[in-house]
Length: 160
Image 1 (cartoon, rainbow, N blue to C red):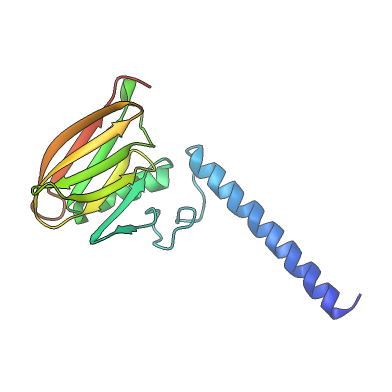
Image 2: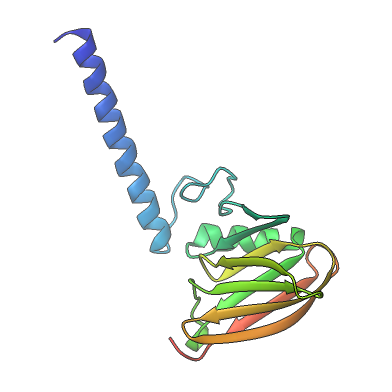
C-alpha cells in the first residue's frame, strides 16, 4: 500500500468510528441515558445546554429530552428572563410545541418550535403574551419579564 492509500484508509476508519460514537451518544441521550460527552448533538455550548438560537434581538434555547439537557436547562433558567415548560397527560414532557411570543404593542418577538419540554428565552423587560400550540390546541399566558430567572410559564395539555 502506498502512504496515500494508507492515509485515506485511516481517515475512513476514523470517520466511521466517530459516526458510530455520535450515533450512540445521540441514542443514549434520546433514550434517557447519559454519555461521557456533556454536549448535545450539534451543540457548541457544552454542559448539556442545547444550542442557543437567535431570532432578531431574541435569543432562545429549547430541549430537555435527555437527562443531561433537562438538568442543564433547569440549572440555566435562573440566568434567562423567561422560562417555559410544556407537559401533557400524566405530566408527560412534550416537544414540538409551537411558541409565539407577542410584546405589549402587538409585535411578534419570537416564533419558534420547542425541541423539548423546556424553552428559555432572553427578552427585554416588559409585558408579553406567550401563545403555545400543541397539535391543534393553542393556549396563552400573559407574562411580565423583569430580569433573569423571574418570569416562568407552564403549559399543560390533556391530549397526547
